[in-house]
Image (cartoon, rainbow, N blue to C red; front, side, top):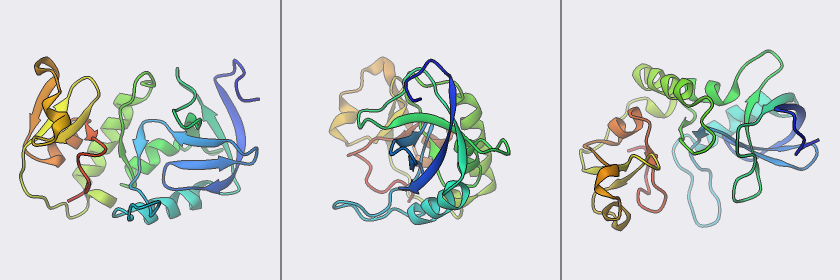
Length: 195
């Protein structure tokens, strides 16, 4: 039963929303901890590169299969979704597996930090190997400002970047460098994550 004291529980996947969100047979939605996959079309936002590929791969891995959910300190996000690390019966750690294949990037979010270092190392290996969204990476050098507290990065010209306290500021000359350091794009500031 969700909400019990158990640190892990088994469920069956009924539906796959996208590369990092699923719906269980009991109707509960689950958001994978520690990763973010590119967006698919929704509302007024067009799909990002690899968004549909990430959803399709996630679907191939979990749809109609039993999965084990492992929880961290915070169990729900602001949308009411369960936050979990997802494991398949054969032991595959799906959050990590999606990073390995380049279908997602590392997403730091307090207080759920249990596997952070492991997930970041896997992302770095995928970047080095040029897998998935890291393949044929090309970008113009620009100035980015990271927030050491939130682990998000902004364009230097973004109004939110100007609000970062000096002690929390770190500069990057490319998105690649920011991703490699474990930072993720700040929503509303960086519209096109990949190029």
